Amino acid sequence: MLKSRITEMLNIDYPIIQGGMMWLATAELAAAVSNAGGFGIIAALNSGSGKGVKEEIRKCKDLTDKPFGVNVSMLPDLATVERIEEYFDAICEEGVAAVETAGRNPEPYLPKLKEAGIKVIHKVPAVRHAQRAEEIGVDAVALVGFECAGHPGMDDVTTSILVQKAARYLSIPVIAGGGIFDAKGFMAALALGAEGVLMGTRFLLTRECWAHQQVKERLLQATELDTMIIERSINNAARVIKNDAAVCALEMEQRGATLEELLPVISGQLGLKAFKDGDSDAGVISCGQVVGLIDDLKSVKEVIQEVVEGAQTIYRRLGEMGIGKKR
Ligand SMILES: Cc1cc2nc3c(=O)[nH]c(=O)nc-3n(C[C@H](O)[C@H](O)[C@H](O)COP(=O)(O)O)c2cc1C
Image (cartoon, rainbow, N blue to C red; front, side, top):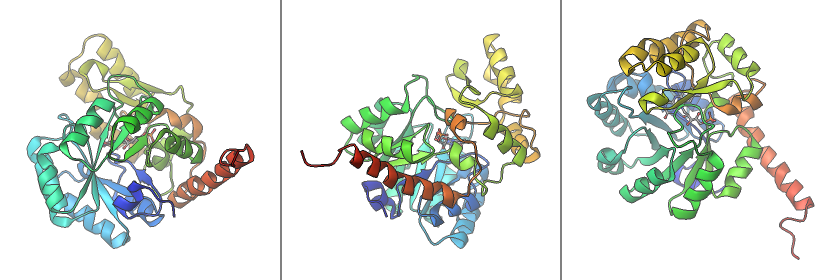
């Protein structure tokens, strides 16, 4: 067991969190992460309704007796306000250890989450948003930097800068996300002041993740130069794998396309099709630069064990360098 305010808050063995992933963060994946001592998270958006979220939570409870959470992404293009409220109601009625909120200020939902005893981890790409989140009373913040899969914000600031600055100015625990896949990133994050890490791309590339093998193969071949940012022109920057859909979207943006015009290319349904059929050019696929460091498919348990055991190895190496010895 490793101890931090995050492990204590979530009642888990290791401060390793699987970030919400649209379509992929299922009960099966979340349960595998929680069973391995980390904190698994289901994506509410996958279910499409409050009823669906409840069913997915129940399924996860059947697969693990360990704590897990639900991600609610509140970007306006992903779900209506009514649907988001439905998700939060379902989560509060069913009960989970924590929610990972993202995309918008979660303030309106905090009273009902607190009443239900559910912790709130708000995921943000900027320190100013993290400070605001602390002010409104979230329990922890996850800072995701420029290299992360999904939405790195519009400021282009890296994880190492965000985490260090957030840890300097915030009192609530800080979680580091973006560019982390192993013990080295984990230890670096702790050194910067984080009390836990959050990983997305690494958990996509596990055996338990249901994405089609051909998509996984493509990502395993990818280098750190094979991701790109799209949707910057509509103030919704997203890091995705460089594929036909993403290149097409960027070209359209350069010609001044509107969100409505972009939707047929960037729609989540096409991403789902890519994951299902294995046609990795069919839609946009969120992917972090860390993909350039991942070249094997592991089980979730192996990923978590590698982080935990690798951390001890690094600690020993630092000891051999004289770090931690009395002078
Ligand atoms: C395929 C995929 C889908 C994602 N979908 C979501 C999502 O729906 N909501 C969200 O908040 N984050 C989403 N993310 C972002 C992750 O939760 C996490 O913040 C990010 O992957 C961390 O960066 P990393 O990939 O470098 O580890 C997604 C990431 C991936 C790889």
